[in-house]
Length: 481
Image 1 (cartoon, rainbow, N blue to C red):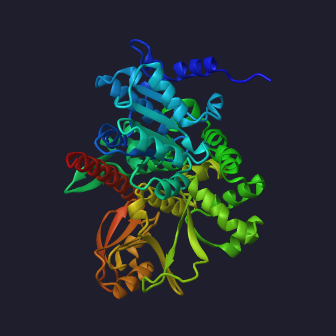
Image 2 (image 1 turned 90 degrees about the vertical axis):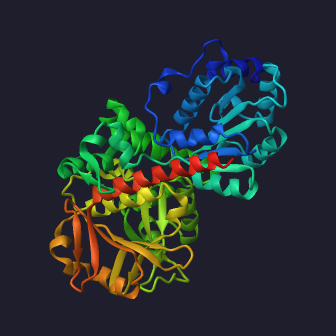
Image 3 (image 1 turned 45 degrees about the horizontal axis):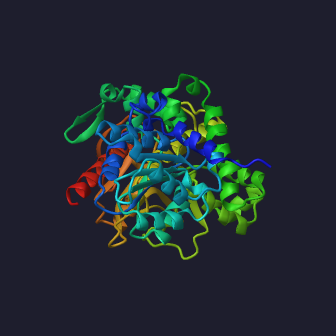
């Protein structure tokens, strides 16, 4: 039987690393794409070599991890980094199977005559396909302190768990999520024409036009390729379902976790996607999907690990957690997945309320620290869509009710739940109600002050805030090193 030769591996390495050649550059398919707003804070992290840590780039499929890695290489080359000091490896490539990471590192060092102290950059793309990757990577970080190691992977939660267990003090995580609504508007060239900053707040120049773009974002806007490529935009169902959802459900998760009944997993995800923005229970899910509850709990963990869904947990009217949390809300991490499975909703579709709520939560998912403190409140006679608990006091800091209608602005009586919750928690700094088009300050019937803001503006604002926060944190971290 023929074995893969070292010569074949060397040819593939040269093909994947064209910058090794004189005047070599990254492929034009990467170079010509616009940079995501996350590029600058990520490159800050890469370019800060004083701290001996590997960078773990996390994120779901097709959000641009490989693109941002190649654009990072391009920027390093522009800054004068020699091409032969950068190694890129995609561990999805079959020819690299069964070859240890250190074998590549040693071969790279020997091939170009580097030393152990050479300031190299080595990138492992889709590292989750290597068994015990975290052990191997930690060993490399300890053994080669001058090398900047970068790894990426699509099983975000699984990678994060392993990096924290085995890479404490050796790994720094960076999450690259689906496109924010703010990024989407920038990429389609409509951010400046549709939104302006006024008095420290974002305001729509034309709310109807902004809402049309918001609906487009819900349908296709979470993935950069769907925005940039006209042929993909014309067939987003095939792109999102076949190239993203099916690959995760039919290949990634079975391979990572040894799942045998793929159809069972697929049925569960379809049920969850249809119910995005709604409360579900293990009992209900077991009956509707036909999956045993013990298996169901594992599948939910796997789907979260793949960054397809996120569970949001419940508190009661007193902001207390439930000891036996059998009910929770399910949200897709990218609302356009629902459109791919069940058809694109129109502005007046009855499902828009739940999908708009999914979009708002999906922006918060971009910050793992903030999302850990977001809940929904539910009690016998009421519910609040989003409640943020102060991490120190565990008391409600603010609350948001998500509506895709202007009715609540003219009939505040339907917001009795929010009024009731505010009375119990008077220290809350903000009570917000999202609308379809209306913006303004108001009061509920009992005098509770509330802020009305269009949902599309609320979604844009959250995404913009989190991007600014990430850039600021990166700059401060770089300045203090």
